Length: 614
Image (tube, rainbow, N blue to C red):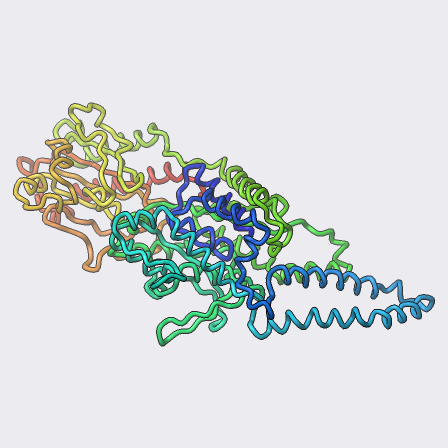
């Protein structure tokens, strides 16, 4: 139910131009994360549940089916039991108040209890019937209808419509001939066939077999056989209210899932540095590796706990003391720990909506109080909460002036190191490419102001193209002999294999360029402790380029380039045209060190503008 607030928070982020790449969720968060991951817009999801709320039982029927007429226990019956419990608890509390059991009143109290014996028997009946169902079936409601509704929503996604339009195989829905629930394997097949893009997804569930939190992941092959809607149901399976979700994985593993919130209700930890390392390991997915190289902001959406500080004097009262202890034991302590762990994740922001600002029913199981108006109010308040939480954070690039100053100093120092202090012979240029979507775009430059002399002053290409793209994806310095590369375009059978460039892109490069050195601009707050292997075969290299050894790795803001009209002959000592040998030239090593220092300075400039800095 509170997923409607999270849904509004997600819409608030989208309003700010923030589009998540990877998502994780628990319970209500799992519903929101999965539906958005599959391509549904938050407002579309809101409208769907608002339409269900028009019927008095439209939402409550999702916890069913409820069994036969003779053995029917539906949500209305559950509500009647809850109301009786509330009345009985109030009655017992009044009857056992200490002040009423004095000598003057106890005979009358005793007679009231004798006369009320039928009511006592009714209490026993009302308690035992649901408890028998609860104990025998490990939960009151099956939740099968909820599972079918999630699958129905997934099939209404524009991305699934795109798969169908592209001729992809979409299995028919359940309850039809040959129909079944959509599985994670279906989504992976569509991803592999490049019919649509689906980013990483993590859903938490508590596995009662192992007594551990389990991360149901996409695209983990271990879960390809698992229906997506069933994974959502498992993560959102409130214990005792819903029955556990039992799942068998082949002949080796059996799981019995209940709500992931039993152990973890805010799984921000999944996006720590290990997640970046795992994305880098997806060697067959260039789109994932492209995101692995980028700096991220981790934004958590959650509903906060009541953090009102208690009066110290109240803690001397046994009842208030027990309330405080049980409140922490029931999830308050876990929630506090989760928030602190989320703060450890680099560049993390949390949208935390106060409990009294949700605008919905007081209790999580009060589904009957949801109306279309309440659905819209919860969505709107969540949306405003997210907007307010991130209104002071900017996602803009730094001003050109400080970056240009660094580039100017870089050109000056590099020219001196190469023996051309006036820069009249080598005509060094410096620029910075930054990622935008799936492209790298030239955003900052020095010595490239004249568009006629520099036809590449506004260069843009794919994040996996060019030496800059290789440097970005592999997060390592790269050296290239542009003269040899240009000749290769005249003789190669497939020019597109040369850094992914075609002759049109290569034709935009300034013709007199013979040498290029590219260096990644690391985010100083997202550096990894050790180098992650970039290819199964070691460092990337070819006849025209060579990767330089480095111990650094991590998130990259962009790529710093320095190119020149470097004469490989006519100077003493001569520059070796073979990049594998040229990287050992003392002059080139000096320029590399100057560039690494400049890249670190630019990384600091970018970092100061980036939100969520730790």
